[in-house]
Amino acid sequence: MQGWHRSGLVLLGCAALIVLVSRLHHTPHKRLAALARSEGTLVVYSVTDSAVARPLIDAFEARYGTRVDYREMNSMALHRRFLDDARRNAPVADVLWSSAMDLQVKLANDGHAATHLPPDAPQLPPWMGYQQQVWITSFEPVVFAYNRRLLPARDVPHTRMALRRLLQRQPARFHGRVASYDIERSAVGFNLLSQDVRVGRDEAWRLQRALADVRPSLHASSAAMLDELASGRTLLAYNVIGSYAATRAARDPQVGFIHPRDYTLVLGRLALIPRNAPHPHAARLWLDFMLSEAGQRLLARAPGTYSVRSFDGQVRDFDALSELLGNGFEPIFPARGLLIYLDDVKRKTLLARWRTLFARASD
Image 1 (cartoon, one colour):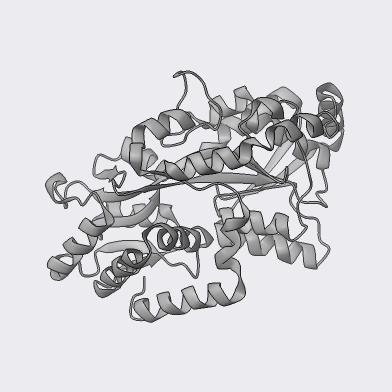
Image 2 (spheres, rainbow, N blue to C red; image 1 turned 90 degrees about the vertical axis):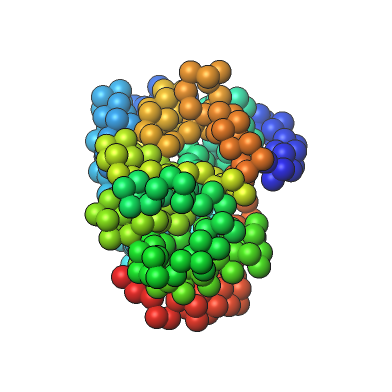
């Protein structure tokens, strides 16, 4: 919660600038919609489950008459696909929509993102955008998920220290029956570990050692972890994206999840428009729609997903999430600080330490 106050105060100074610049950098809505319709197609590379994105896509296509070519992939594949497209001078996506927050900020920092301000930028929280190039479209808490049938509620740990001690006390019970991210295959997993290290410091690495000692299964996505959890092959999954856990729990009574009390990381799904997007007007219209009241209401319908706008209790929003998590609320904002562990030396050091711990663990 303190991190939110610090970041909010720092970013409030940008609000006046946003008001001024937004008047200079957007095309009137009707003209933008007409130009997007003439382009005909919008290509979106995304990590967001297509079932979650479908209401947004359907509403956009119905409202603006522009077809959405939606291509779902995991966070690492999305990043590499975009860079490979750019190197080959091949047609690239019009929008990149990913929860790998650090990689999205890095793309902007490396000059790959176009500047765009939605027409109502002055009414949006100033922390929503990074350099007017990368925008938070929704927030999602990061949770512990568990199998309700195999792990009784009384045994579910509610802090990282409690999880570590549980694994250390009962290694045989949890041997091969915990799921976590493979941070070499998942950009989101890498970012979440770097955030754990930022917040938890040495305790984060003590937990990683305890996880490694029980030889967890390592996965590239939250969906894969939840599949294994629901099947009964694992008892608990660490650092699962909350929207996936909430969606699965809503249809499968065996899946449960908790928000850790020591701190709950809250990540944002970030959207950016590549500088050389083939359909730039459609891309801008899509981004405007995602951040509009209508788009935010559609996004917040998905279980475990929270709007970045405030809706006075009508919609799950940032304020409601802050109240839910209380002192454990640890939001991640798009900022240069996310680039720390993408520095070659720091990245290699973190990966090497993780590899040493998990050398024997595999799917």
